[in-house]
Each structure stands twice: as C-alpha cells, then as structure tokens.
Length: 329
Ligand code: NDP
Image (tube, rainbow, N blue to C red; front, top):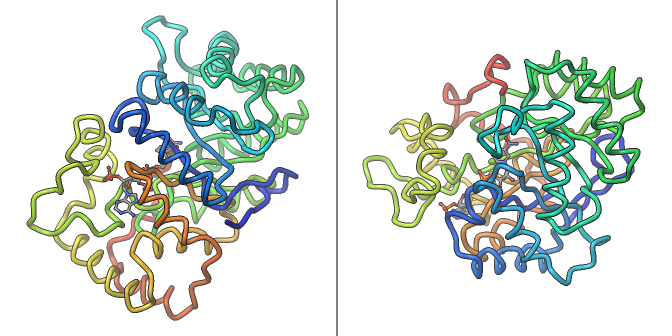
C-alpha cells in the first residue's frame, strides 16, 4: 500500500481506502463483512469510510465489530452526518443539534473516543453555515473529531466553508466526491477550489459501483449476486449507475477490459489506478462484497499509467464521460 497526505494536512491516509456503503449491515452477512475488512487490513489499508445513514445506522456497528482488536492509532476512521437517521424533524441536516447528537451516536456505534475525519455528507441549504462550522469547531476542540470533510459540495460552497473554517481554525481537509473514468464532474471546479484551500479528494465509486469491473455486459442479464441484482443495492445502483447500463457504454467498458488485460491488469485495477493518477486525489474508496475483490483491487496501489494509456482510455470513452460541474451533489 502507498500512503498520501490528505490535502495539505499532516494526516496520512492509505491511497486505497475501504468503504462499507450498501454492503455492511445490508448486502453481505457479518462474516463476509469481517473477511473484507481483514483483507483490507492485510493489504495495508488503514483508512475506513462509513456513514451514520448507511444500512439504517447498522454499517457503523458492523465496521467497529470488524475492527475489534485493531490498534485504534493504526487506522483512520471516517464517518458522516447529514442524511436522516430517524423520523424526527431534527434527525437530519447540519444543524448544531443534529451534528452534536449524530456525532455522539456515531462515536457510540463505532466504539471509539474520536472520529478521524467527520464529513458533512451533503450541503444543508436550510442551516446557516456558521452554525454548522461552529458545531464542528466545538467537536474538534472537545477532541471528538480530529478533522472535518465535506461531500458533494459545489466549488462555491467549498469556498464559503473554507473561509469559515479558517476563521474558526477548523481543520477542513477533505472533499468526498464521486470520481471515476466515467464521472469526472469535479475536475473543472471542485478540484481547483479544493487545491486553493489545501483540501484533498477522497473519491467514491471509482468502479462506478461495479460498471468498471466489466461484469455488466450489453444485452445480458445482470449477474446474480452483483449489486445491481440484490435488494440492498439495486435501487442505489439504478439511481446512480443506471445511466451507464447502455449498450454503447458497456461496449466501451469491454474495450477497456481488453486494454487492461494487454497491460497485465484487470479492469478494476486499471480503473482504480486511473483515479489515483490525479495528484489531487488523496485516496480512492473501494467497496467490496467479497474479500477476493479487495485482494484484487488493492493491486492498483502505486501503479503508474503512461500517457499513452491515459490517451487510449479517453479515446475509448469519447462522448461517454460526464464532465458537467453542475451535476455535483
Ligand atoms: P466501487 O465503485 O468500488 O464499487 C464497489 C462494488 O463494485 C463492490 O461492492 C462490488 O459489488 C463491485 N466490485 C468491486 N470490486 C470488484 C471486482 N474486482 N470485480 C467485480 N466486482 C467488483 O465503490 P462503491 O460504490 O462501493 O463506493 C465506495 C465507498 O465510497 C462506499 O462504501 C462509501 O464509503 C463511499 N461512498 C460515499 C458516498 C458519498 O456520498 N460521500 C456515496 C457513495 C459511496 P458487487 O460484487 O455487489 O457487484
């Protein structure tokens, strides 16, 4: 494994991080979840990503069980707040009340005294940003949170947040956007805005939820057991990756598979290596339903793709890549 600084901060993260959205507490049983985390640890992954909302709050608990016995200082535990975790009118968003309550609930489920990176999972239009950042500042001063991140915020929202973070001396160091060969909407605005503020990118769905594994084939039924086929994953897959289940995209993905094989790689390895070529990316968060996927995917760490390979990828995906920064969030 290779390790990178998260933005301009002093915190090191594994350049491949492990996330448990959809899988832990939902798609996979606990023994499989533990085996995936074990495979991640064995490969040198130290950065673990979850959220209070994943699997109706069960994912944080499963992750903490999977990490039982692991030295706390040896891992970076990251979680998020914003999406509803209950039915009350204050069980969501970035109000001071919800941030404080959600943080304590996450600490409890994660069985830890502190969260390494605490993300605002989305921007909250209904709460003054000062209120949000003052709550973050208090959590940082109390030692319950070490660093702050944001997820799927626009460049303008990031600039506003960074100004407040500076004023309140809050270490805002991470942005967590979707980024893959197929989804490059952060490149035009979010990445430059973050670079100016010393904020690193910790990117999600580098395989476009499995599309960039090559397992979904044009005109073939989705494979049994894949995210697109499971009750836990199908609706998220449809909502976020459904746009790629088109013949022309899947045919291009099949050409990418051949390109990867010619280079001695698998397509997941090529796709993860591709996001890691961007120097503004501090880590790629992978998901896995089987430990073998982790073992395969971590081999992308440290790979250099030559410029000709990068051009060939762009050529194969011409006209299929989403780049509109307006699609952020
Ligand atoms: P990926 O794009 O890496 O997709 C992971 C899924 O692809 C796996 O669960 C598996 O699904 C399939 N897969 C992985 N490796 C292989 C392989 N080698 N061969 C075949 N199939 C493979 O990432 P995710 O979409 O899971 O997102 C990763 C993490 O990012 C999340 O866990 C979460 O922590 C974070 N995230 C953050 C969001 C945010 O709003 N901030 C939003 C979404 C995710 P299967 O086997 O079931 O088909």
